[in-house]
Length: 342
Image 1 (cartoon, rainbow, N blue to C red):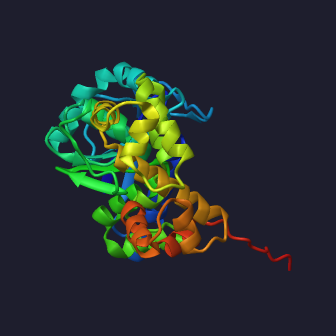
Image 2: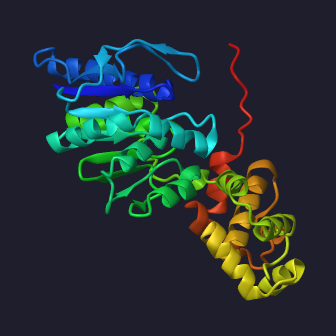
């Protein structure tokens, strides 16, 4: 039997606690059927909070606990649910500061051989403990810049839904806790049990990338709120308004009334990217919205985002999103379904 210790903190997401536990409960049921109740449960678990008291999550769900997080207890798996981002990056930094007392225990659990499994923004807690230094991880895609700025020594595999480094599992945005839980079932119970769980709960076990879900708007909202570079703000606005035109650095520099070198330097210092790359991301974001909300042809979508060659646009779109334009439209365009009333 593998014992899971779920750590609760005031800003943890309720679904990132209860969702994985439902997965483990179903795994136990399938395990019992397969083994005819002769070998005990596959998983057991306990919920632990910082002070041993119940935790009320940001969604007002009250979670009872089995006790406090103890330095000398042992677990096969420590599960860290995602941290709710009600107050943005600044709020996350405050939450991490408030949880700094957990870091020695987290390091001790890793040294004892526990699998550390973090969902979404909880990857920040592992990085805060120094457990990812010189290694790699994933986290929710829209916190890319915040993570890289705070932990430059960690290689961020942002496109991945799941990443593993030295017995540490990290997962992408929000509901990737299902993929994280599935992986733990497969690791401790085998492929057959995991497959049964995936089919029972409709978990897409083949979902491997966050790339199709990434949107520049969400990613750059952090930047526009955090940086005060007026030149870059003006450039961002101009590039957004002129997404239908081919990108030309001289035109952008002319609009800003500065040299091309100055534009490049400001983008690099403020956003850690180039004007051309940023403009391309803007265009891909617009293309995604057009594919989701219109019936425009590939040629029309390419034209409206400033690309005259549909083939080049198709290759570029796939590089940015991990899907062809047709596959992206099929996956993300709202389907019109008629429910049976019989």
